[in-house]
Every structure is written in C-alpha cells, then in structure tokens.
Image: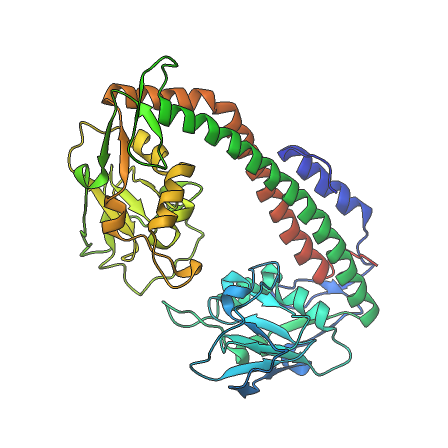
Length: 440
C-alpha cells in the first residue's frame, strides 16, 4: 500500500517513482501529437493494420453470455459491473469474445474501455476491437486505448453535439505505438502493479472520508433535531423518521414554504450549474462536458435561494440551494421560496442533505429500478421541514460550521490527495505506453 501522503508528498513520491525507472537510450519522432517521441526500436503503425472492428450482430443471448451496456463499464478504469441478467433487446447487439477490447464510441471522453474476461454481448455503442496480429497484445491494446492521449484525440474527432460519437475510420487510422511483445507484457505488468497500489491508496482515503462523514453527520443530526439548548423541552414531531423535536419548533410541509417553478431561458446565455451530492448546486466546471443539445434555450432558470434537485439522484442528496442565477437541466426540479425573510438558505441547504432526509427521498422516489428512481414535485413538497425561528436557524448553521470545521478540512484534504493520485496515474499511464520511461 502507498504511504500516507499529503499533497506535497504525493508530488515528491511521483518524482521518486520516476527516478526508479530509466528512459530508453534513443528515440525517434512520430509526428503524432498524442504519442510524441518513442523508443527507436518501436514500430509506429496505423491501428487498423493490427486491429479489426468486429461487428457480429445477434439477437440471441446464450446462458453463459455476459451482457454489457455503457453504464456497466466504469470510465478510466475498465472495471465491468454486473449487468442485469434478465434483459431483452429492442435491436440487435454485438457479440464479443475473450481477448476483444470494447471501446465506447458514444461520448468517448468518458473513457469506457474494457477487456471483459468472459465472452458475451454488448450494445452497439461499443466498438468491438480484435487484434489480428500476434505482434499486438490485447492487454496492451486496452491499456493504450484508455490512455488520456488516445481519449482526448478521439474525443476531438467526434460528430454530433448532443450525442457525440467516435468513428472507427478515424480511430483505425490513428498512429499507434507497437513495442516488441516482451515490452508490451512488461508495460502491462508494471501498470497493473502501479494501478493496484494506487487503488489501495485511494480506497484507504475513501474509507477515511466515509468515517469522517459519519462523524460530521452525527454532529449535524444532533443540531438539527435537538437544537443547541441541551435542556430544551421536546415534543413528538408526528413524523416517524424525525422523532422528537424542540417544543417551540414548527414542523411544516415544504409546500407551505416553497413552490415549484418552471421558468425557462429564452437565450441560454446564463451560466450552467451542476447539482452534485458532494457540492450541492455549483457552477459547472469549464472542463466538464455536458450532455447538451446544440442550444441551452429552454433550460430551467434557478435563482438565489431556489432549491434545485437532480430528481434521479435525490436519494443521494444531489440537491441544494442555488447561490446565483443559472441554468439547470429541464429534467431537474426547481423550487422557489414563497417568502425570503423566514428561511435561512444555508440552514435549508444543510438540512435537506442530511441522512434522515436522504432516507425520506428514497422512500418517496418512484421508478422501475433503483437506477431509474425519480423524486417528483408532489412527493418532495409533501416532506416535512424542521422549522425553528429564523434566528435559531442561523445559530445552528454557525454552530455546525464551527463544530465540523476540522472534519471538513480533513475531508477536503483527503479528496485533494485522491485527485492528485488520480492525476499521477493518468500521467504515468501516458508516459509508459508511449515509451517515455522504460519499465522493463
């Protein structure tokens, strides 16, 4: 397992790891921006000279067949999740064999590239790539296709604004580094080992974050359900999942405090907003591509103080209070306060993302499967809100900020360490598969 590192130590660790390996003795130019210079003895050839795009279509699923849709492949890792066993096909799907590499051509920036260990079927949005030359290992092919240089190059070639797709003709004509087979095997072994160590490090940090979040939620739950006076008299809330609450607090359904709004933009010029279970409602990062139509016209407008909900992921607390005017997906829910002077937006934001409320969202969401649940307006507005006096709302927010400041700082630091380690892995893979370092 990697040592416990802070941000600066991660960078020092990277430099140390790089010092453990050597570069090759001589290089040559490839005239390919994503490859750069490669070792003199490596071949540089077009991918289609070694790989075929196999399009064996079928409607029949055999009992032993694995079924893979795009959502079953984790981006950038190649991990394949278990797909639904009972599935019917509205159209033909593709058959793949062990050793084939699946490349997600829809929204290729998601880097859904995998080499399944069992044969099976996949949706047509995958290219099924099969090595036709003994000189190219499928394991090396998978690793290299999932490297950032390849993904960025393919993504820049896509067509279609709302549903961008890659084309095999472009991918097949890309120049590709072909090391000798023994070096391909060494590259795969090295990256597998590095990847496992990085996964162990990230898993440890994620476990730490989960424990800290539990501690933070305990502090928040106590403040939101009991207030700040340890001697306050309590009364039954009448809501099972809320329990007893301070006697002087009101308990109101959200529909008496908020109303659904469906204000649409006519220009699409406002800033796009992201709704996340981690950050609430925030401006979308400039480097994140949205699944957008050619125009943002018709998107919902949210304004300061509005509750914005990602209806599909509400039970994961993908909601919050908007701090600015912006645009969100037409499928999101936007709820505007009926009055502004009786609600502290920070109080509502924090309260609605607590564990108790997430449980309520899950119970009230409807859908065929867990991955298709939606929290609709009637159900959301029927939820009870703990409603202390406005001054007490502000006091609770201040208390939580102070009581959890160290916890939040530690969580933020752990998340940043994970980001740095992921960045390190991305750079390491790119350097190794293009021969910038010799891992033999």
